[in-house]
Length: 103
Image (tube, rainbow, N blue to C red; front, side, top):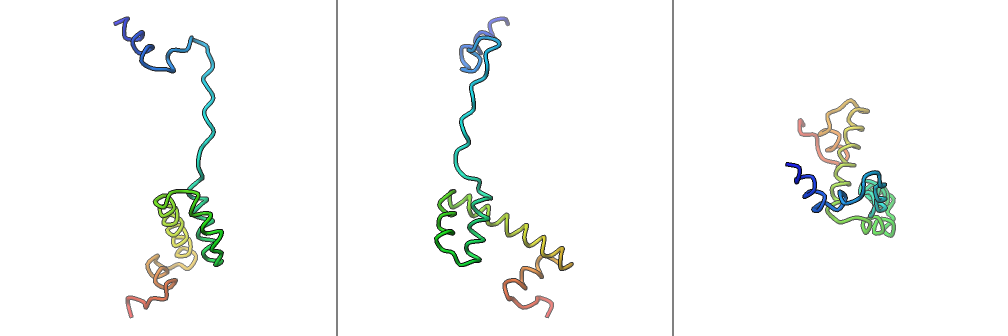
């Protein structure tokens, strides 16, 4: 049983440091925040700024940008629905210029 900690120390690089040694500094965070990229992308599209939209789209992967845009849309729709005191579906249909389902 006393051999287990020694085996772990040999297998795990962080366990090889002598006791009391400082942990190595973490590398700087890489990449861009997908929500920041999505916010810039959607705002640029709303303002018809193709250059800024393309720049934001290049910050993250297409899948990450899609996720961020979807999250932004959901949050915006919920906020508008609360402000209007209407269901989210009614607000979404209104924003897209679709006829009311109940009509």
